[in-house]
Length: 173
View 1 (tube, rainbow, N blue to C red):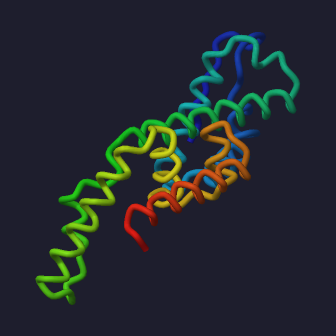
View 2 (cartoon, rainbow, N blue to C red; view 1 turned 180 degrees about the vertical axis):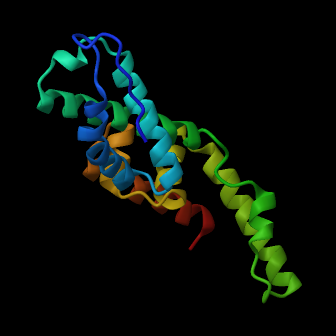
């Protein structure tokens, strides 16, 4: 798939630019994004941004790659931020996932537990909600979360530990 076209060869990127860098950028994106279609969409956005950047063709290849990776990283972060502002998990969805082997009493207890958890999570500051979402819903590693929220891996680990400790205390576990 060739995305880039050229009009002004002196200031624009040519088709070989995409051919030279697309595999590297796609691999970079796929390490961060689990869905191949999302990765392709992000890659398209990255190369569209490259096409719109007038002086990128004048830069050296290493700087071009760094620029492409930085744009890809920012687009990945934007996606995670957008997803993290959604509700963690609606109670209706939780009920759909209930184990069919549970008794009606166990279903009721589980429903109340999830309702209580959902209530507690909604009281957390938005950044803590985002970190919990990225860790337990998206399944990201601490280092990846740190990049997204601009914190060190150690700091993210510590925050998750404190949040989980607070949640356990709320449940008296």
